[in-house]
Image (cartoon, rainbow, N blue to C red; front, side, top):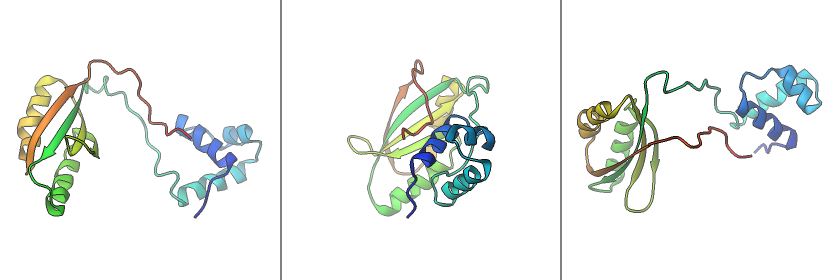
Length: 153
């Protein structure tokens, strides 16, 4: 298994901040030439440290002004039911994140929609079709204080 060194970690930090940074800029930051930087990035990709590069969109400009965290409890707990829930929930485009959690609930969903009316429609027509949900508890985001996609390294 490949373990990144300090230079690799520096590259990863920079790429997390700006995936459009050029090889030349990265080379200047790491005191390496372009070729070794390029090779290191490819090695990090091959070894799974870089999963993919994406563009982060402005959800407000796209009309997704409401974020809701929805705690879900299943009626029953079997492998088959859990797998079916995961399959159903991952197919819902409004669910941007889903975590299997411990405590009073089984799953935590992050749901992104236009407004309260759209969330009500989601609950009734999309989440309502998912089998074996015992209960769901919604928490509405009033303000976003910190948002980051960076992994602390």
